[in-house]
Amino acid sequence: MDLDILKRKLFFMPDATKGAVRYLTTEQLESTGTEAIVTNTLHLLISPGPDTIQQLGGIKKMMNWNGIVFTDSGGFQLFSLLHSKKWEGEIDDNGAVFKSPKQGDIYKLTPETSIDIQMKIGSDVLVALDDCRDTEIEREDAERSVERTLEWAVRCKNHFEKEYGGTQQTDKLLTCVVQGANYLDLREYCAKELVRIGFDGYNFGGYVVNKDGELVEEEMKVVIDNVPEDKIRYAMGVGKPEDIIRGVGLGYNLFDTVLVTRNARHGTVYTSDGILRVKNSEMALDLKPIDSKCSCECCKNYSRAYVHHMLRNGEATALTLLTIHNLTHYQELIEKLNKQKLERISKK
RNA sequence: GCAGAGGUGGCGGAGCGGUCAAACGCAUCGGACUGUAAAUCCGACUCCUUCGGGAUACACUGGUUCAAAUCCAGUCCUCUGCA
Figure (cartoon, rainbow, N blue to C red):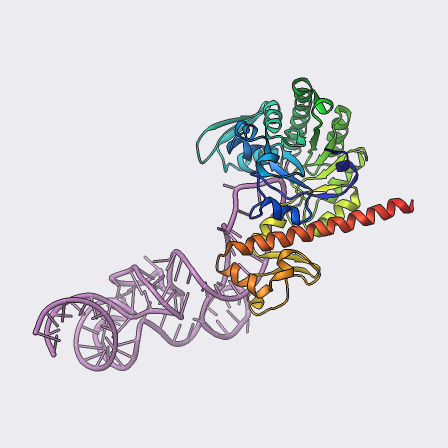
């Protein structure tokens, strides 16, 4: 598989956290123009487990998906589930030990096990385990997060190379995550150090919007300015369509966000005319498609009124149709941005 | 006809003398969601308001009380059982 394209083209990757883009069959996923997806190491570790996935022939065979697969390292989950005390567990310099809330089993996630799990899952692009934090934190915490992220990155790279032969032997790519919260000098330091260690990609990590929901552009800029242009530059968790446009403007080329699929399930839909809340009463008699400029299965066949009705009555088909629509909308946006990018390059 | 139970906001249903404009569901009307514990969560939901409050409200009509959705009497209606 030619993964080098990940360094040149723009991609939007929907999140298939547990090995499925919610409400979509793999065929439907393909129909949206999606070429790459992001799955999650920690969630797949808990269920069905890396050994099971391996026995099933890897995530791609399991899903019958021929596109590109990323595995997010689980760093974000340590932040969102353990730091916030939603799950029981401890994070220290060696990694994390935590208890799954449903089965109660104890799991260990270290830089090395994260790589092992990602290998068993069978993804194309691995992400080094990172110590993810909120944007607005004390400097001391941000420093610790950067130090830990760097140490873990080294350990991930070493393990990936010693145990598996690295990119050369595996044909897989290994990316890392830049932390540093909203401290620009820490972001710069973290990026430079990671570049010195050397990875196939540099991902902007942390929380990508501030308290007011504004994209943390300044931080994103410092990072991209200190990262090579010929590598993957992935803005993790970005974002709203306008945020992706900003991210592309800064120089990032990969994006993912749960907004596309989650908002679809919640009845908020992106159109060429802005957002639309399909559940709202004004849709009840609206015979127009969600977006008259869209040619997805939903827009081609059904009215706003029909989807509105299904949504209000708990019909899962509505969630599928709106997910197809939102994802198609995002992929069309990315395609447009890709074309613009190519035109700019050819003019030079 | 007799006996029993009951009538509460759009609906279901708590409350059974003051802390009740009335719990909790549902429905309705808005909004949020950014490396997914999310088909989730948060508001609003009698009317008016200068956002401090104010005015009407728990079938209806009277009454008791400083105070009634809550107690008493009558009226109307509903359900269940027996004739």
